[in-house]
Length: 262
Ligand code: PLP
Image 1 (cartoon, protein in one colour):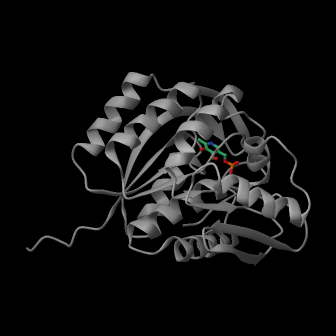
Image 2 (cartoon, rainbow, N blue to C red):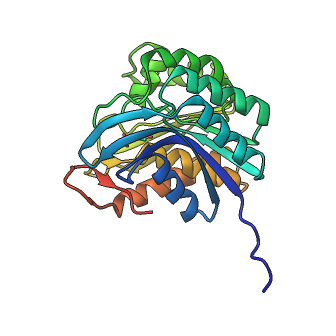
Image 3 (cartoon, rainbow, N blue to C red):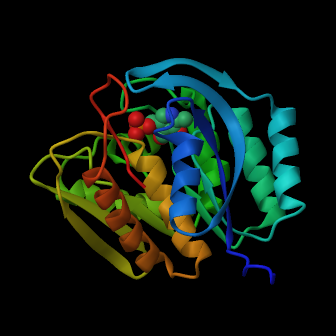
């Protein structure tokens, strides 16, 4: 029997969600749904279900490094997505590996706090994110609270959002997707900023809260980039993917948020 053609390969460097809704688990489901072979480097282990996070265990640096070496030494990695990294030393280690390995595409999801309110990144790690990881990114995907934390100022008006795009781009990412899900109104407006300007992506706001939407969006962008799509197209398609997956979402446990159907 002839070999199947090899799909493109994408890597997620992120945290594990034992509840299967967010983190590494969401990323691998997303890669699979896009017919991309998914690799994972687990940077932190969360004890988590649909009701919340009960514990976070950062994976020791030596084991993050060995996972990174294992995957980069073997696979032709087309795109990388980073999610929950937990602390400054992990951010520095991951940035240093990416500087050395130079993947063609890097999507950075600056995960800080879960929807359920748990800290997923130490406060003192924000500097490392800004100084070391974000300058390597092709697409940075902050939600509004994350953008506020990165910039150190509140974002409420349309003018403040436009300025935020400019200032986040100045941190060195080639593109910035400022996600509007935490805003108000019947529509969600995501804004994608790059050196050509800004594009707005609008979707009707679904009357439900999602769990793992941010992780899924960033990994869908990475999958689309791995498949050869240009960033603007990758971002648009990924936003549609998340919207549909939330529409078809379900609640597997007792928590209120919906898990995405990939
Ligand atoms: N748990 C892990 C391991 C994550 O990486 C994330 C993603 O950002 C979350 C939880 C938070 O997911 P959400 O805020 O969508 O509930």
